[in-house]
Length: 171
Image (cartoon, rainbow, N blue to C red; front, side, top):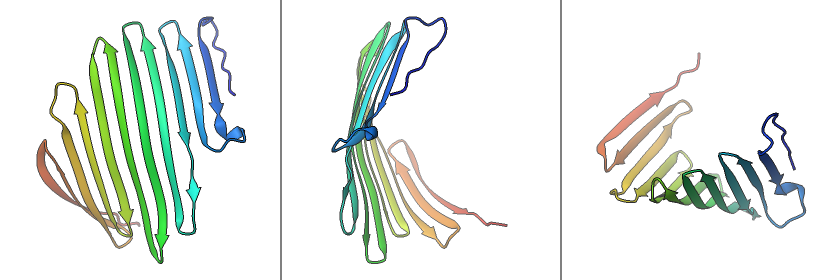
């Protein structure tokens, strides 16, 4: 556990616990900070499952922030995978987050995303929704060409699609 002292801040407090130091069946951390202006509490937990072809790591998290005029609660969940099938590497992430706002800005914000890489190909999809607004969608598909180049197609519901090509030559 870390403790931090700040002069002239007698009402401030800070605690950070790294759960990897304990013999638990999961990893993560707990953090708590408070001051006269508000407080923040956060917990993140994850567990990696290893197998003959790779690993999968589910995770969850919660954050609560309180200030004089607002309160925000965030809920997170994710799943990361890293597998190898023969010579082919497969990695991917799936995540979701929901924020609940109370106080000055009342409403919710939700974000869901998916990212994956298979060999030289990758894909990323993202959806965001805020109370009172239409959802935003974004996605991209890319391919690594050789060791130094990348071709990517991106699109969203807020603009025209784009195609980009990056060439990084090392001198």
